[in-house]
Length: 484
Ligand code: PLP
Image (cartoon, rainbow, N blue to C red):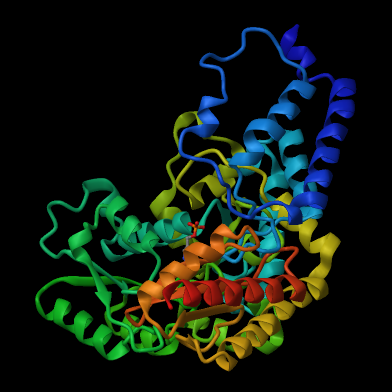
């Protein structure tokens, strides 16, 4: 009875409207809220009852607690002054897709469990492969294809497992790696995302078997060092099997020289994965594409996060492989209870064979709705506008003698510091983040403490970037005064 009430179309019609209104109100008032949550650790839990309710509560009661308890504990990722990490976008169309996903309640582990879930995903990823200008071999119509994962971390893990299987002639899933005489070795740069190291640990390669190749002063992988490391390993009887290159590193947005890296991977028949988690979205703009997809034709896998900068809400990582067989041979397990004529015919894709979990959400809907209702043209404008704003912001930094750029802006990411040194930069970041106007994060760039301004929020426009700069110089003035 209660369960039926929770699934009552009329109640849903009424209550869902209230939720939509609540979200619309949130967006309208968002800009007036401090970007960073101000609560102390434990504050949110202290507001909540110790036990779950026995009796149903009204939507009004829950929404009241959204305002009273949840709201103060939020860091507002959709605030136009959010410049930390890499922003995570959302948009109306993407949320409609998310809502449809939840409303349909489909679980798309097999083609047979909902053909539309699989076929829409295949189709939309082919659209995206073309929009990004990725090589044709990543298309489902060729030997490859795309799949939606939750995150870039899952993407690199799947790629690494496929590479491991390929390098061990499909033996490592069966017999493990512990008895191998020839240890497998993975390579990435010191500036690569930590998800590469995590994947190496999870896949049983062992963290001792990842070589972190140094970067040059621009944060790009040093390919002479990569070639030497791979040759050294091969000469010692180890098996170089996987290289993760980054296009748009997390700390400073550097692009690894993919074509040179590909020369090394080809020599050792190693898998080349390209992590373009953030920068990849910008490849939809023809004027930015070349640098982003350069060398992609040599890659075995290539992934980016539409949830970062393509107006799709978290989570949505898109991973393409050049040889889908390599991925499915590594990840497919088909117990009796999953057998069905369509899978056995070999004529369909079962995306559970392309990822770690069995079950999967109908994520393609939000990507489809975003692409259809916003359109590629407006998505390009979204990205180009942020790239132009980053160039403008970098100009303001250059013009102020107290500041310096730690590297040239990369797309919409600007890394800068106070000339007074790391301590002063860290103090400035702390105080500016307290202002409530903006939220920036930091990284180490060429050994220096860098303040990162990552422009990419759905609502972020020139006025917000200008306010961020104003807040930074006001805080820098105050720090100078307090020290004099
Ligand atoms: N790779 C790069 C270059 C990133 O910047 C990030 C996150 O910002 C990731 C991977 C990890 O992304 P995810 O949170 O989707 O696993």
